[in-house]
Image (cartoon, rainbow, N blue to C red):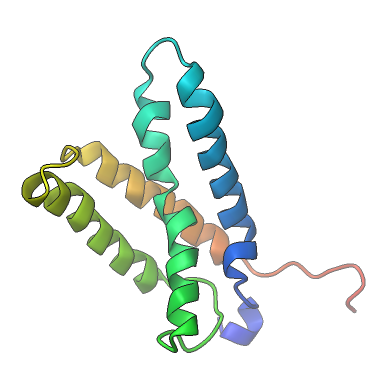
Length: 134
């Protein structure tokens, strides 16, 4: 599907980004502090699921400003995959081994990939036609 057919990616105004960012903020500000019992999902895995939908649009916007991204197409599969590879190496090897920060948890990698796959699939949906057009 061509870029013209797919529409323009809106980066920080993208609905996937905005919803994921809102979930992240609510989790960090309201859910985590109020949980009496430790919950691995809310304390770690939810943030991992939101990595791609929250971070990738920011990176792609910067690349666009720097002229490293040729257009405003929705994120391509290889952009998602490349960032997943780099972030996985950084957060699960460099951080724990070199910086001695965090833990190399393979479940986190599955969460990064799962969140990235869902976000990418949503970004690939054809644009809706408004009632006014046509």
